[in-house]
Amino acid sequence: MTSYVLVTGGAGFIGSHAIVALQQAGHSVLVLDNLCNSEAQVMDRIAAITGVQPGLIVGDVRDETLLADLFSRHNIQAVLHFAGLKAVGESTVKPLEYYDCNVTGSVRLLQAMQSANVRNFVFSSSATVYGEPQHLPLTEDHPRQATNPYGHTKIVVEDVMEALYHSEPGWKMARLRYFNPVGSHPSGLLGEAPRGVPNNLMPYVAQVAAGVRDRLHIFGNDYDTPDGTGIRDYIHVMDLAEGHVQALHHCLAQQQVLSTLNLGTGRGHTVLEMLRAFEQACGRELPYEFMPRRPGDVAACWAETSTAEECLGWRATRSVEEMCSDAWRWTQRQYQLEDERAKAASLDS
Ligand code: NAD
Ligand code: WQD
Image (cartoon, rainbow, N blue to C red; front, side):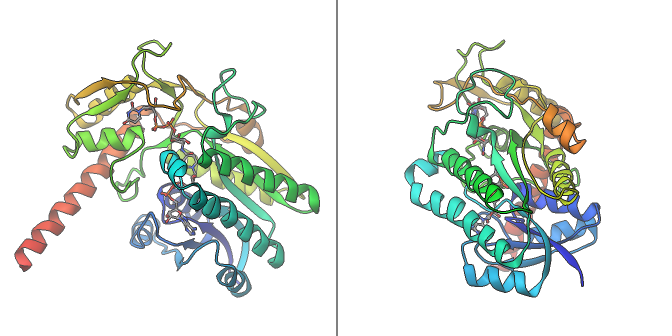
């Protein structure tokens, strides 16, 4: 009987890349996604890269009946839990939706796993749990402080995992705190496709490069950083994806474990440095304008990565140049496909 890794939120940005890395490492994957921020065709694109179409179950992680059925029908060995809502600003407007999806969703999933005696669990946490850095680089023992409901949902789920771990033996779990995931699969077939105006820097820059937005608004040029713009630890999504495979293997190899690991590069780049790198990738200057600081932003944030290196034998290797050139390939392909669809529609009418 095939043994599966269940990937919740596997049609999304990070989950889809993780599936590629899992399949390439020899794992069979099942996906549970309600497609609230993604589309089913992502599975076809994964198949075009790996040659294997992952099975997609369209459904919600909060659906207890669906989960019980899923765990009883399939031999699931482990769960990688990406499904959730992730927009910081939206979480302040719709906090109940965020707690319901992110916290209730995680609790229901863990309950279903407990009932099915599946105890390998890898969770998408975030560097947002650190709040305002008290020291840099950020170590995993840095105090946690939520500055918005989204960040708080991550802290709560981390705590739920801790309580569960101590309540009964045998759980093997990793809490992965991602820094700033960017870039795309080098094929240009997978990438980040935010709906509406992008909240995050690199998708916005990509849309300026594609001519969809007229200029980048840089939030703050008066930070205490070399060029005055904010510093972040940008990590290529394929490095992140491979980190998940290593985290899964780390869990599978233990009798029981609860690890908390930063997944970043350990290096920071300013907004202007990222913009320049994208200009190199797309081959032209990109317009920008300085704006006031964005409320809630920190000046600088980057990871201490030695815990992940020691625990997982993993470290990020891809450069900022690769992050930008891969993201640009994906962006061009997206807009090219949109143009083709529009042309086909106008021929039909
Ligand atoms: P994404 O929105 O691209 O992917 C999330 C996927 O989960 C989507 O396909 C969505 O349809 C699905 N989903 C949402 N709620 C669901 C539910 N209730 N049931 C089933 N499916 C559901 O986001 P992403 O960037 O791939 O992020 C994945 C995870 O990583 C999230 O938990 C996010 O909080 C976390 N994270 C993301 C970042 C980032 O910058 N992208 C940083 C740190 C942590
Ligand atoms: C990066 C830098 C901005 C947009 C967010 C979440 C965090 C995590 C990752 C999920 C900052 C600047 C941005 C723009 C800009 N997600 N910027 N113009 O804020 O580090 O982290 O995504 O867990 O929780 O808060 O990422 O990409 O939004 O910003 O100047 O249009 O780019 O001020 O310095 P951030 P980001």
